Image 1 (spheres, rainbow, N blue to C red):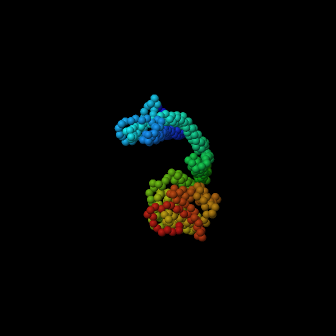
Image 2 (spheres, rainbow, N blue to C red; image 1 turned 180 degrees about the horizontal axis):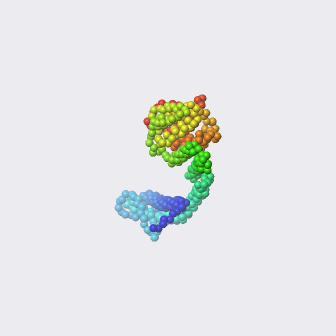
Image 3 (spheres, helix red, strand yellow; image 1 turned 90 degrees about the vertical axis):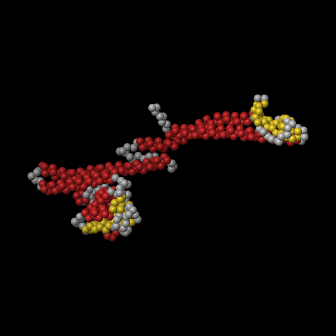
Length: 429
């Protein structure tokens, strides 16, 4: 099968514009020549008719006939009429007209004629002008279209060249944005915005991998070191204590791996096809199963509040908030769920020391910690709140650390879009 010839956008645009102008030029030219011929012929007929009228008055008044008018006495009575016709005299095309008039001598036929050579010359000149001018016009159109298209596509070529230099290891380059608000400018802006998001995502991914490697190395070292010492001096090892410490480190390692896997699943999940669920029932179940031996846990849940999302992810979100509250609370942790303006509002408050203003966003960073001197076994890996915010974002919501006012402590507020069917009083969370 013969391979199709692929033309560039510039070539296709030039050919298309030239063909359109060519068709339009031919149509206009034919119409112009036809109109010119018709108009000149009508003017010639009008001149002949005027001459016949002058001749008719001359015959009726017994005066001499004007030039170009002949007299044919038919002897029959007819009404006056003007009838254009084409005849040939002396090999030249002529336009003829005749009329009959009544005279004292009887009915007389008057015939007037005029050469159509001037009409033929005018239409021929117009046709030649079109035949000469049309190719020149098409050449100008093709050249202008080629030049204009190339100039319009020049920013696209610059964008393509710059984009080709990008790689997965270096996304710092940005596309040149041409002036104006046309398609190339909007394309460059969109690509730059996309590259900003990709660059940020790659940067976060690299940082996440580095932090995850460091966090995984710490519990592994904590497990490996005492085991190596016990292997060298087995008679000195306190095996029950060593086993308990190893199991504790393995539990922490298990939680860290679980958080990492959950983060990976969240990045790939969506809530578009998720079914609505009763958030109030889920909160009640999580709080009921939760045992906080050190602090008091209370829950204030509104009537049925439905949201669209994944039960496991939302349960993990609340569990992480409760874990964080338990670590910092002094005596009490409160959970509240309510609705307001079509939003489900879930709040978790503790009566601990709170979070300084300058750290209110840092605590949501992956592997971020406010107190770097805090023990890792007590403080966790720094993924809990980051994971909770990612889950809220996945469900088209938000997680913020709100102002606790005079009550002190920390108050985390999750806001999610509520589904139809939610009910319950609107209260401050």
